[in-house]
Image 1 (cartoon, rainbow, N blue to C red):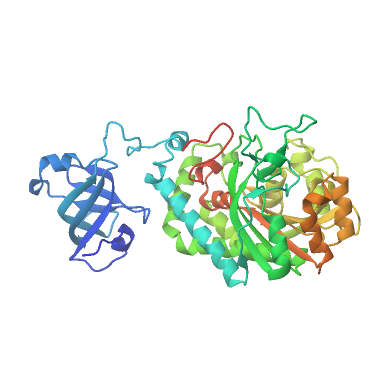
Image 2: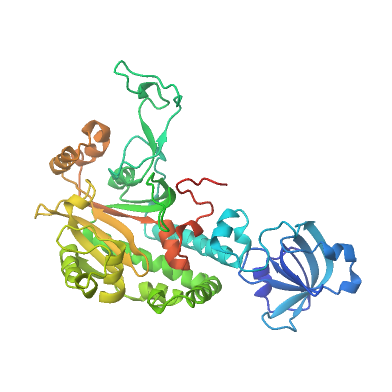
Length: 477
């Protein structure tokens, strides 16, 4: 008899058949009802034990967290809440769980407590649901790009370049920290390091992806990226995953079309395939917000928010137009914004982005043509000389979800921009080569995967959508 998953058993309409299942005990009530879960679904299967037919010492070992193997008959359930249950004939405890010390007891736990027990937190409904949704999103991303003719590439995790010009990078070295080799000038001699030069963990695979796009046409990366920003917020991680497509012969308008279609497709996939998990997470969010003041509650529930993105056309607005809207908005005039918008050139904050999406346009927004001096060196300069062909996609509840641009394909302009920012040409000689040999218009964008997972699950802290978060002062597990 093959072992079935709980998900398979609960979807069966054939009863009165012998089944076998393995999983972890969630609860054991009245020495009779075992709620069993194996991670395949948010739902438990009820296993009914006739305690008179089992050794008392064995039943005492059926505690929350124990791993068990059950064989019995699948029957129509007499109780509420499930369609089928198992009348247990054989019961084996595969792994005991001491109820005195097992941390995930069947009661409400704070997310802080669960982060301290991150190795066990997927034994709870919330975290198992989040991780199933995350897995489905990951699959949907690869599916979308594959079906649309993209090639997946793995860009280097260890790199000698700083793609963002942000400077917040983790150094990779084999040199002795206490006593590194020095040059005659007393500087650290990186020529003696493993790679013969300074090396860091990557902040983005974009520059390398551009090189492949300029020969393969359409490529995407989906890999880990690292930022050494000392940001202890609910939206920042030191290690996270990024999705970065790059496409040859595509301009900014095409880039916006691609990003919008991509987001609607992957979010549509989880709406279709993760219904039960999303319903559970939706109810969790509503329960959590009941105790909050009305002003802090989400204007939409979770599933409606996802449908809002899937069903609405994204509004495209220039940065210049957005600044005017914000300058004249009520919260700006009444000084309700933490960051008051006074003039063109301001870097928009999350509060401004959310105002545009949630209050003003009431749909997802794509902002484009940003001031050149607040954007990266590789973005294509517009004819006005002061804006670049950049675009950001703004979502309800989150703010910026996607950042992208048409890349600067003109060699002379790119060299000027690099010189103005003191980026040495010899460091990016290969990137400049793309502009010498068959250059063409090309574009791409970056999407932080965990931000997308936060949006899709309603989780308020990015540390709760990645198995083991890496944040300042924390590399546990």
